[in-house]
Image 1 (cartoon, rainbow, N blue to C red):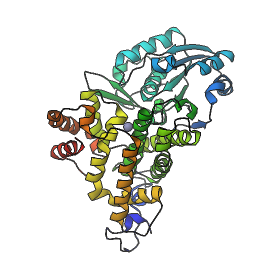
Image 2: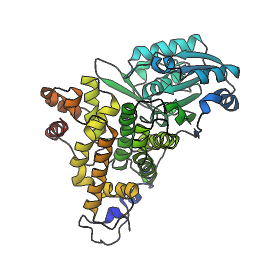
Image 3: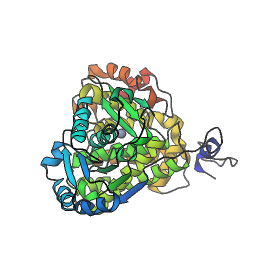
Image 4: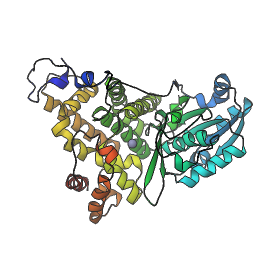
Length: 411
Ligand SMILES: [Zn+2]
């Protein structure tokens, strides 16, 4: 019997089917799981990238989309050398910034067109990969960017697209979503089938140079992706569940080592793969209130996405306990091993395990620690309520008053 059917007191109920089994796979609600067709995992592959690309693609003019920090740190150099050695013509766009505005995309597209780019390689964090998706479309499209916002507005084909993350966090390489900053603090998304890459390359050696706090914040973001996908009220299904559980198992077991011993190969590889699996989970079963409450922190105070999620995770987990205890208990079984304890006990063990993980990661966990003024909490709560596309996925309905209480709890 599935643990999801156990009543809260832990006694045994009559066997019933798992909700996910009854909700999906019918003609009315087919189970559709989408992902990138090829995932290649290889330690150090960036140093033989020329050979890799030559085996996969006939095209020869590559645009690498990245940021200037990575370029200045010399992380690109072995990859560039290898690609040029294999006869590829390389153009580098290193103008990507966090929360990229439309102008960054426009500059990248112009460069791609001037260079006659016929392959795009996104190499970096989530912002670089988000820009790479849209450059691959707009390099050969007649459509204007303004026509693309929303769901499935992209027409026609794009040039081949390869994504290679250098952080273990956003999971952007696994999704078909691209987010741009369109106003002072507002963001808009483009979701389209064409934004799935042709290939994703995971080379965890690229993440070895990440400092501990960035490792912690990006890793916690990915952990949130897995938890929120597993409890999502929309399109949660047995496959997204499977990816979310394994992502959590890999990441919760390796986050602290990755933070403390940055060059630990096993920990870096587990985090890189875990973040990708979490990305595949939430691309199909979308994230919820942690992200809804995190976004205003980024919009109003420019707090990085991973850190914003880390700040709001524990208050939201405790808030959701009322309705999501059975799901948290299942995640606890996946991460801590199954026990015969009652559901609520197993759920609480999971939530306190995550709480301890956050403390051990060294990530700031209070809004006051990152200089959010207390008087701004009501406006944060107001902004969070605007994230309706995320809030509808939360296992417990949330009012503005609830949101305010959660920001207070996090303060
Ligand atoms: Zn996220």
